[in-house]
Length: 555
Image (cartoon, rainbow, N blue to C red; front, side):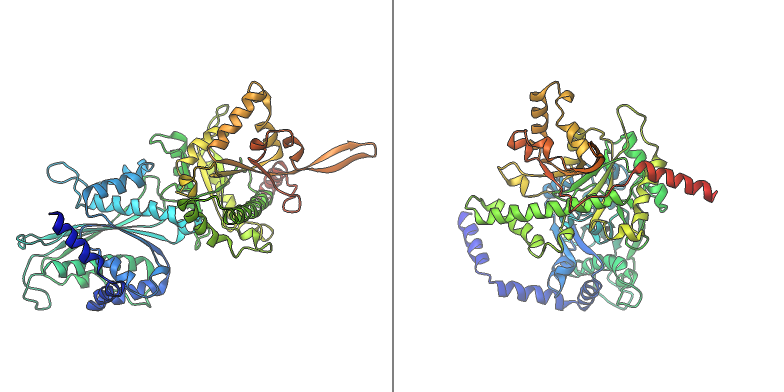
């Protein structure tokens, strides 16, 4: 046996890259429909696609890969042929998506066990692939508007079972978690609608299923003027069947206001352990609505606040935080690549990060690749929970800022709103950490920044005030614990009126004075935003008064 294995390995190692390329090309050229579908999907570039395929249909991935330009639309392709790989993939990506799992049905076989070839199994695959895509996308805008995930399970014709009808299940999930399902029955009849006289063999069913998978993607990607193929036209045998249905998250609504209210209610009630939901902006409608899964890009900027209402001061501070962290990250990468202290995984992640920062100059520093999430805690230990309608109102006011000429230029490149049930910083860290995308921090032995909070100097002063911790040592211990969890703070200053001999005088308070006597490791957890990057004096109280006055005047 060992000799046979060794022989097999030798044969495998002798296959050249040119042979692999040739085989991939021949796969595509064998079927003109596959070729046309791939070219059509790539030409639109409207989505970034991920596949999770268990069983037949893998030719959809290989055909797309062998088509020039595939990198512009393909994110990843998982072929989960072994049941353990299926189980591990699902469990890895859907462990924090209980609200999504509860909506999946039609997954049991006749004996009551889990059906690995079922409509429910395909939906699980598409949702897991969607979650995986979110982790790779690293931007809320891409998650909301570009990501598309396809899951497929099937039982195709096998040797000695040619009399059996084949079944396939395709599930396509968009950024909001809404799923379109295709349940397909492939006939075992010899006669086709176009006069064919032979039953499809395994290879033909593989090709057909690949065509159907790509056709399902095309429904999302192509307009009427482009090449399209109706799935019914591909099913050309007597007895072929297809049923199309949809599956939506439990809180889904086509009305954005109601959609956000439902999401807020889930976070407040926490019935299924949903403690955070992200809202992203639809590029076409310019409205905010929930994402299908809660996934934070790595190294995100979290801006906590009540946002009643959100205003230009908030978005300006957020952009200033992006500038500050971009410069900091560039310095970190520069120091890393000029040092000799590295390991293979850290080098891998830093090299990948470098691609996003190498073209950033001081003139474009506000375009640094950081995502800002404006965080609204809907629960409070000392007050009743926020009403879902109020949470929706405040969230949607962020959308109005995108139409404000003054605020437009200050809005971060990538941003969203996150609703949580965490009122204290220690709770925010606990909740948000489990949703972070994998990053170099996970493979590094060094203490690294995982999540950054944007705060004002008044909040910073409270964080380092010993009276809240039963003394100075208690404060250091608590703050260091956050640091051990990868927490960092970016601090925006404020304008204060200082009494002098000549009367009151405006002074910009940066927070540097309050930090100077702290131990170095604690002080390094805070990065001060320079006054040149941020100084906007806007009062939320004044804005609320203006809004109330405007409402009274209108009525």
